[in-house]
View 1 (cartoon, helix red, strand yellow):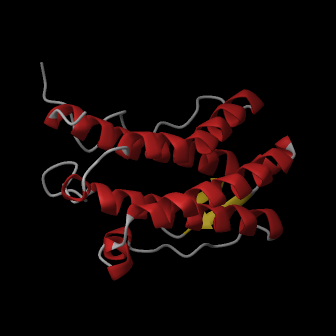
View 2 (view 1 turned 180 degrees about the horizontal axis):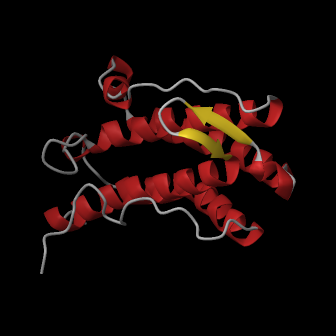
Length: 176
């Protein structure tokens, strides 16, 4: 049996075969659930455990939590841009460099609280959108034209992806 790929515990992102209202609702639910699932995944971890990389040469659990906050803030802004402008070109950022900034050494509670508030607002925005608005697009300089229903799917997957990094680390290390 092949070794599991620690980078992708739930597999790489896969686009929905057929974008639909049903898929959009599923991804909205994933986004809504992400903050609570992250809290559950890190519950009871010590500071030393939070500073443990989820895989060799990977980010620490602390960095993962802060990364999710950084990433989802950018995603929220990108949604707002795509809803208020015609195919805006968004600004990419270096996730690896952002993970090294001093604020990523702060307690994870800051980013967890931020994610709870952000996901609350994001959820309100998502539920207010007409189905046709999910076809609006943004332009990513590295990925090209991306419709909002794909962005929604990416970030539904993103929260589950990083939560699985943490839960898989806990399981491998026997952290209860």
